[in-house]
Length: 331
Image (tube, rainbow, N blue to C red; front, side):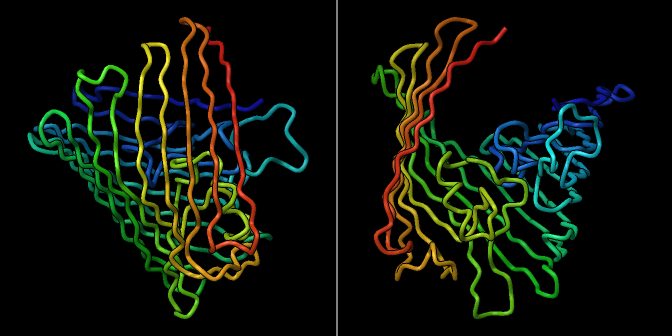
């Protein structure tokens, strides 16, 4: 038993459009491309940060957010009941985080500009300290009532031990909201993402660091295939690119489903035996998810993912199926 969220919050400080929140809290900006999960090693059990976070709303629909966080390797801040022995790891290294996020809504688009800093501290298993700066920008631009472009990109600098870091990445997609003339189809989108890989022939580290985004942002199953190529780290999105298409449908207000297709690439060679193929084609990923709502208390979903491996992996690598079924009761 652990404490998932516990914080103090002060709204409208001095009558101003400002608030602060201190304690264990969830922190997510936009779609969580860089900042969402503060503890990637516990799966979906929790995603909290131990943080001080403030927000201030300016005129003309502009908001500034800032935070400072400390996420230890194991939960040493709040009491635990029936803790594991050895203790459950939250992340491989304790880390200190800083963030500054500016969001502005205009008549034409929504724009976000932000900066993150993450310092990772050494321990017996991970003896190298690192400090990563992340500079990012995101924009959502509508075209009429049915089409919207979403794009986000970032540059990373800093150090990993004695090596310097220079990495880059981003994602972009075009969403089309289908008009009511299509009674079942809701929306469709096409896009991709690109997260740079490390070139072992250079003194720089060019591999994208996912900071606090080691969560199933694109796939629930594929995060586990990343473990062998990133020193045992689950959900470490790096050295990967995708071209993808998605379509969402609704049979009724109670039943909806979504189809997704990803063609995945690697960008650099990997020295692990797992990724010992002679190419850069990671393979093709198919995703089907349906959600259903029985009544106000009961709901659930069914998720199926199928992956066809490409020539980036070892010879004769098998495809896989991954299934999850959930039934949830809410009081």
